[in-house]
Image (cartoon, rainbow, N blue to C red; front, side):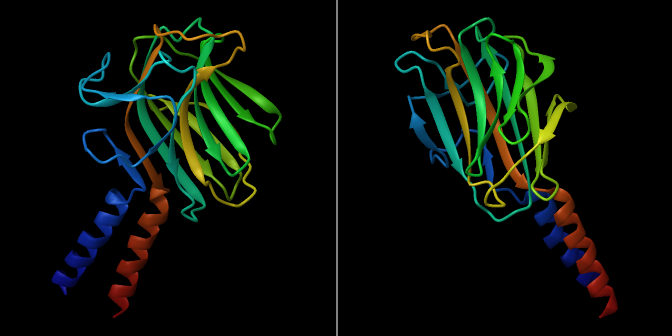
Length: 223
C-alpha cells in the first residue's frame, strides 16, 4: 500500500512541479520560439544576467520580436521571466509583451513613462501600474491570467504592481510575443538600447495540478 501511495506521489509531483508549456533558458541549441522581426541574439551574459540570455537591440531594425505559440485550451496561464534593460528609460522605445487571444492585450516597459503600462481595449484601454523601472537593474516578472474570471495581474520581484480585466474572443491565448519597438513614430534606429530576457516559463495554473494530485490520493485510498 505504501508503495502505491509513493508511486502516485512521484507521478503527480512531476506534474505539479514539472508541467510547463515553455521553459527557456537559452542554453539549448534548439529554438522553441520563432523570430517574427529583427534579429534578437543569444549572448552568454548581459548585465546582471550571468548566463545565456536573449538580447534585443534595434541596431539593424526598429522592430525586434519573438513569438511563443500557445493555444493549449487552458483556463489559466502563468508567465514568468527575468529582464534587464539598458538605456530604455527616457527613450522612444518600449519593450512589450503581447498576448494574442486573438484580440491583443499587452503590457510594456515604456521608455517615455519609465513604468509598466498595461493595455486592454476591452477594459478601458491603457492603465499605468505606477511601478517605475530602472535601467541596469534585474527584474523578475510574473503574469497570472485567469480566463474564467477575465482578469490578469502582474508582479515584479514577487510584488503585485497591477491588475486589470482580460478579454479572450476564443477562450484561450493563441500566442505570447516579446517585442522591442518604438512607441514614437519619430524613433529611428538606436543601437544604444538593449533589453535582455532569460528564464521564460509558461505553465498552467499550479493549483489545478495540485487538485488533480489530491483527487488521485482520494481515489487511491478508496480502492
